[in-house]
Image (tube, rainbow, N blue to C red; front, side, top):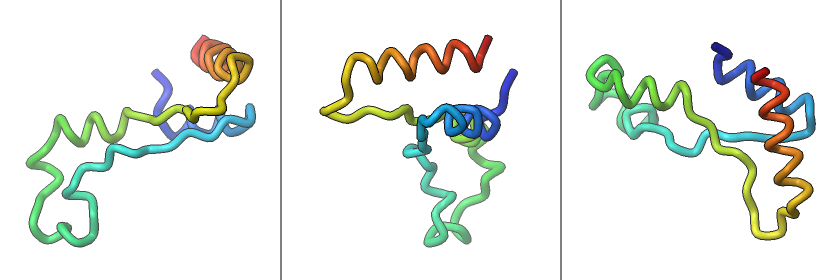
Length: 76
């Protein structure tokens, strides 16, 4: 029941930066006048509820465990 923005803040408070990388095309300024957000309710829902967790080649198992444990703690 936690919204995405609050989750981002809680993760950042624990030293973990998250992102949003799947942005619907109609949200880009170039297409702003071509599309109406109301025409894409499922895409909008997914956009407002999705996050990208940190992932990179040099990420250690300890760092992965820390991200997992932090998520569990926040959502508890």
